[in-house]
Image (cartoon, rainbow over all chains, first blue to last red; front, side):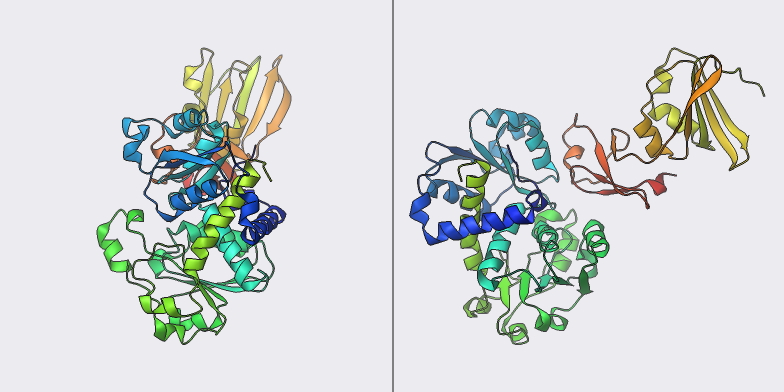
Length: 303
Length: 143
C-alpha cells in the first residue's frame, strides 16, 4: 500500500508514468469512467478548500467511484478533540482511499502511519501539497513538453507557500532547471529549501522586483500571500500587495512564457492578464482533476 | 576525591564539563535503583575538564540519545572491575523523544502522544529535521 505525503514519495520514473496515465485519460476519458466502480474516496478537509477538494471529488466521480467526507474541522470530530491518528483509523473503515488537508504541518504523515488505506496529502499547513505539484508538473509537461533546461520563476509568498516548496523539490529532479525566486525579504523560501538548492548545486537567484527577472522566465508561478499563514494581521496587510502581475509586466516576458497559479487568486494577477494567451492558470486547474484521477488509479492499484 | 570503582556496570566518560546533570535527567537515570555517581569538572588531558558518570548496573542506555546529546562521549562497559567494551558514540541517524519540535505549526504542537522524531539531515553541521514538518534543529545551539 502506498501513500502520497511529499512529492518526493514518487520517483521520477513513477511521476513520469503518472503523467503518461493522465495523458491517456485526457485522450479518452470514457475508457476510465468505470475504473473505480464501487470504490469510495474520503475527503477529510480540516481547512477550507474549494479547488483541491472539488477536483478530488470530481476525479473520483469521473472514475465511477463515490465520495464522502467533510469540508471543515468544525463539522468533524476534530471539534470534539479527536486526534488525526484516530480519525485516520476510523475513516479507514469506511473508505478505500483518503485525501486529507490539515492546517498543521506533518498531519498527513501522522494519518498515513495509522490509516489502513492509502492517504493522499491534500495540503498540510505550509509544508507539502504534492497533488498541486503533480498538477503543476502535468501542466508544464503538456504546455512545455519537457522539464529539462527550464527557467522557473516563483513569485510572492515563497516562505509559507507550500505549493512553491513542493514544486521546487520536484523540479530539482530534472536537468539544468534554474530558479528565479521573487519575494520580499520577509517571505523568502525557508532555509531547508535553500539548503537543498545549495547542496544540490542548483542555480537560483533571489530577487525582490518581478520586473528584474520576468524576461528570463519560461514559467512564472504566481502565488497568493495567504492570510491564514500569518499570526500577525499587520504583517499580512503590509505584505499582501507586494507583487501584482499586470499587462505592463507581461510586456517584459517572453512570448512563450506561461503564467501558472495554484489558485485562488485574490489580486496578485490583474484580471486583464486572463485574456493573455500566456495565462494558463485555468487550464492548470483542469489538469489538476486529470492528474488526481491518475493518482487515485495508481494508489488503488487499479491501473 | 575518591569515588569507588565500578565492579559491574557502566562508566560514561568524556562528557563535556557541566552537561552531566542534563544527561542524567534526559536519560532518566534518576529513576534507577542502583548507585549512580556524577563527577563534575574532573581533570582531562584532552579537554581540560570533563564530567563522568558511573552507574553500578548494566542498564540498557539509549545510546542514540546519548550520541545526540554529546557524540564525544565514550561508554565503558565494566565487568569484574575491568573494561570489557568501549563504545565510541556518534550522531545517530534518528532520535526519538529527546528533543521537541519548536515549530508552532507542527502537528506535534497539538496532537499529544505522538513520538517526537528527528532525522539527521547534515552530519557535519549537526542539523536534524523534524520527521513531520522538516523544521531544522541545530544541536550546536544546545551546547
